[in-house]
Image (tube, rainbow, N blue to C red):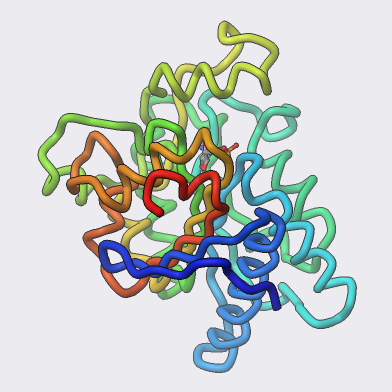
Length: 266
Ligand code: GLP
């Protein structure tokens, strides 16, 4: 088991700092396996909220390895992904559906009707009802046992972008269609072959359902995330830094970061 070089309690969260991001990802995979076993023992099924982006890729690689080693099964697991670009076809190489298939779904025994993503093909007029259904599906399964999260450079979680809405309103935000922030569009440009090709909107699981998860595991690596990590953990609770809203659910958030991402909090 990989050991953190530093462990601290900050703003109600446990923060473990690893010298290598791969060590943190190994620990994240162990946490996820642990949550699955515990949920199976208690309720007979496990419900995971999953994230995309480059950060969690090694976590999925480790989960696939554990499945292949026969120490983990997804037979009684349901997954709900955090977000999807809009509009976006499921087979598009840039879709998060494709990402999940490539990194996890295509390699493990997770049933096709248990691997849920928001649908980037839904007609715009039906996006609100589709998003509300997604929240209902999660609730009908008894809620998320664990939400895996990354954080954007602007502090976003999922695609919940910075907003000047009052905190109480932000905390109540459900799953919905959103406009992407310029920083998000610029960060996604490399994946889409230019800023012009990045969709301007996305469907995202809301702040309320994210915070309702029974446990939340946040990963952040590299110096480009140092500012967002510091503002999430040390800054005031504000919609301008969606990661800071994690401070409102003390005791259930764990951050696994590397030294570079922790540079401004250590
Ligand atoms: C993306 C995703 C987020 C992700 C974040 C960081 O836009 N919507 O869910 O956590 O930005 O991405 P990365 O891990 O590639 O830095």
